[in-house]
Image (cartoon, rainbow, N blue to C red; front, side, top):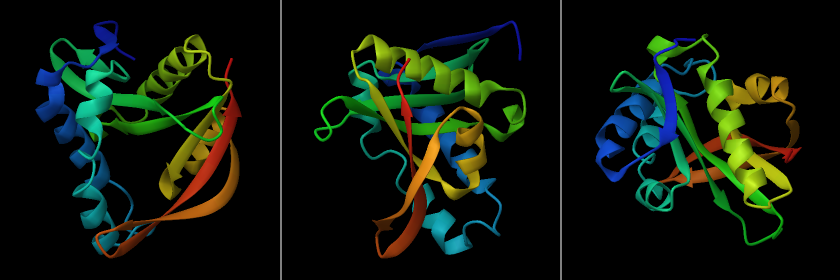
Length: 162
């Protein structure tokens, strides 16, 4: 990774850049994993709930000398009450393969543990299952989310908070 990279809380004025790296990451997903229709539907939804987790201080970004290279966030879960969910982990494709995604997820995990949550859920995109397994998450069942009439499959993965 780059020494000029700063992991920090996202600010409301980061939203345009956050949506840009999210869109770029979704566009780069292998079409053998998700069809064009699935990726288009997914690309329309990243902003859902983002403003709130940014406002709550629960979204972290990787700031590379003023340019955002990726981000990851988290939210609470009503059930089970001791758990949290990792949300919106995206890395700009120009930064893929440099360990940035793992750095962001570990920072989010630390924030979750500091908030007193004991278990972490990741609704992992199918292209990211191996990534999360390498970070210690165990795959559970397949989930399906309806994105305006397009079903997007994902894996529910769990890990204990540190």
